[in-house]
Amino acid sequence: MDRPQAARAARPPVPSRVLTMPLPRMRVRIPARAPARGPGRGRWAGVEPRMLGRALRAHRRLRIAIICTVIAAPLLGGGWMWFRGSSFVSAEHVSVTGVHGPQAGAIAAALEQAGRGMSTLAVSSARLKSAVAAYPSVAGLKVTSSFPHGLHVTVLQREAVAALVVGGTRTAVSADGIVLGPGLLSASLPTVAAVHEPAGGGRVTGTPQLAELAVLGAAPAALAGRVQSVYTGPRGLTVAMRNGLLVYFGDASRPHAKWLSLARVLAETSSQGAVYVDVRLPSRPAAGFPEGAAPTFSASESQSSSEAPLGNGETPVGALSRWLAAANPNAGKKATGEPETGSESKEEAHTSTEAGASSSEASSGTEAAAEGGH
Image 1 (cartoon, rainbow, N blue to C red):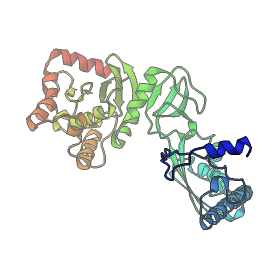
Image 2 (cartoon, helix red, strand yellow):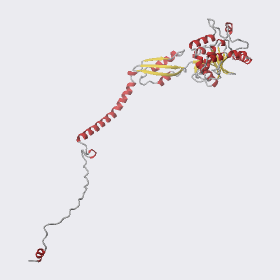
Image 3 (cartoon, rainbow, N blue to C red):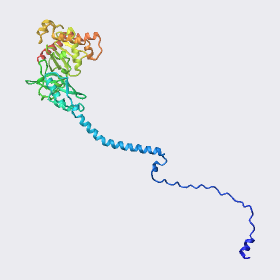
Image 4 (spheres, rainbow, N blue to C red):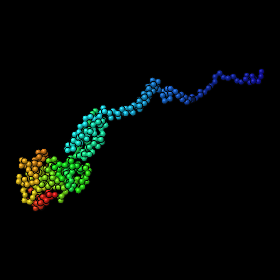
């Protein structure tokens, strides 16, 4: 027997039962494999096939809609531009309202000619204004269209309130100082004196003249027709009535209140025959009489005035007072903007009696009579 075999024979026998120890559990993390690119992969990974098909179809429809919009927008825009300028919407019936006076026919004809054929979907206000630019009496236009062939133009017209006198030249002028030209002159217009005459369509630049025109523009219709002239005198802005009565306004502030304050004084019987009425303070008007004259106005005195009485024997001042009282009995109280009682109204109205009794007011009456010939 050789030695290796002898060594193996000499080894002790292995026991039948071997003690072993359990190894500890170990967790091994295996990196996830990146999904391959392709249909149904990438950002759509994990999406159900049915939902994936719906999303793809929605994106396809959106792209088609965008392409159709880009193609159709120029076509629709061009079609709209053609339609609104076509004869299908051209103005065939042009109506003009708001014009009056000597130039009414010419203004209406110019607007009708400019508006006929104009598109009712694209009304050109500049074209209409250019058609009446030669008429300073036109202050503005309001245009409304009626689809498909109707066009209505409303004219905002300036009114002539005075005759501007420069040397021997007379021209009509509006309350805002716009020169309207001699074509709008009338015998009933009061006069306003000026040094320089602006060109037709120009504007009066003198501050006194602008104040005088503003006062005339605020005059009620019944009183405006009785004004002879307006000028600036020793007591400020003065209005001379056709029957010789002078009205002291002082300045152009609160012109409506001053006119209505004058109407309230004229409504009192005690003011008949007054030489002047001072409305510089609208809430406290005063009437002045010549020295020794009673606050009455008889028929003989009315005959000697610069304006003859009416056919029924009523004086112009009395007629204006009656008209104003019938139109609005409370006009005087509303004009001042202050609450007044009956006693206060009587006290202010009878200031004329106290004024006529004093020597200072008598001298003022003489001064007022002198100013009437201004």
